[in-house]
Image (tube, rainbow, N blue to C red; front, top):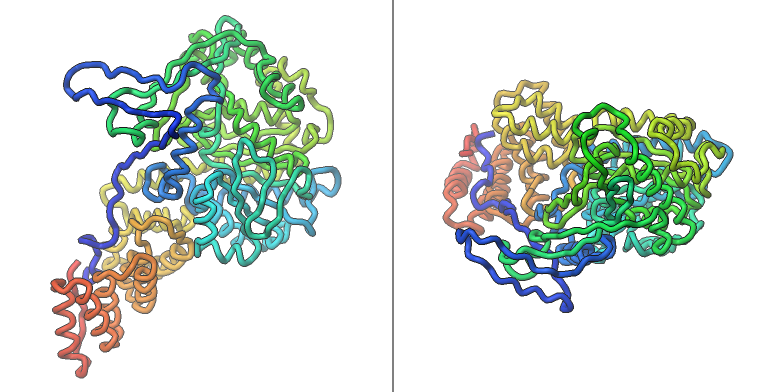
Length: 629
């Protein structure tokens, strides 16, 4: 293993810096911001971009849209917006198992609206798909359980959607997605979640309109709800108040011009009394009862004494919460395509516990290249409940990613097909009563509930993220523990990349059984590779592993792929030369070392090996390849 060059010097793995690029505002919003020198002790003043207005109509959302339009795929590929926690092979497998549980329940329901027609397509629609990586892993995981699905796999169509045309174009030209497109199992659509009412599929050319989809759909979204428009509310002394926001930026924040706008947002808020009919002027008549009931429930709930014994919250006056009405609009638009029948899998940073809303405070904004609100999953549950559906919540509070599932049965009926709770009475129900009705509505979805418990609740995507990070922080994790983590990750290439040096350094001490396990692991890891980040040449690193395991032909295949994806590199050709030498293919070895020197004439390792191969090729005397690390 130590013979192979690790490519740490001048290899094509440039380290991504903490570049933080903000949105570009249009000409109507000029931003010329002076800088106050650091160390003066002066407080930087605030420049107002927009006077007080309803939060969901704020300029902030246009700033975010422009950020993602400008960055495109680089928002994730350059690490500006974190994505590993929601785009790995483990979470793809978990979501696929939840979807399979839903399909199993639908296939057993032979009457009513919640049933499957095996002759019609079932659409899995991902909102805000970004890179398309999550969809790739879900499709791979569904393929792995093809024989256990209670529905034909070739009738399941995954649809990647985003509002940005550049992202759609990226998917259309991505080689790792092409096999699924060719099989008719993947399609694409440009879709603006809060305004578009149909899906125009790029591959099939179909336009999916209201009430046109025969089977229930599955809607998947991660870190989307917190980036769609929200409204802000407080309840003080039993009075419902709307929060208005004035958007501004700190003058003289780091950076200059438009590049630093989002990262230096400095908002101010004020609150005024409103009624529970607040949304009557903003939403269609069909949605007004649902929104009114949600606001009425919160007003009633926060008038009362806290129902639990959490001292931290019981002493706080009033409540502060947001409503993700942008997500509500997106759900209404998408579910209308399938007569209101859907499974929704939503992952975000937020809470399902209304007790966390006690106390009067302004909303928290998190900045990560763009910005996001905390997601009020409880409000999502209430919205689903008001429309006759039910929630399968994940009660874990301390988490960066909380995943919840929801089911809508369509036509405003409850999922049991009975009028168990009328929308008009929802405002008077306690949390315990809501939980009881919610559970009763979910009874016919036993397999969905069990799958969610097994693959989300008992060991969540956030738990996996914390485990792999904890193992990485260990000084010397064992090779067996790394292999166990790779298995738990469903052979995720990003997890491998984090531990690649530890794996390669441990190979000389690995026994025969471990070497066989690692060979199998490396093969499965490459099968899950999704090309995105030019700073992570996974093929090169797997080539090093195969070389250390003495599977030289497999190493050569990886080096060839590395040169194709990332361009010819002198170290890659040098390492290929070592493989050829080990296989006694000396002419090919000479060619590889020569190619390495043509790319870097001063590269001493290649010079030495070329001389050695040239001098001794005919005698076949080369043995014991022991190059430098």
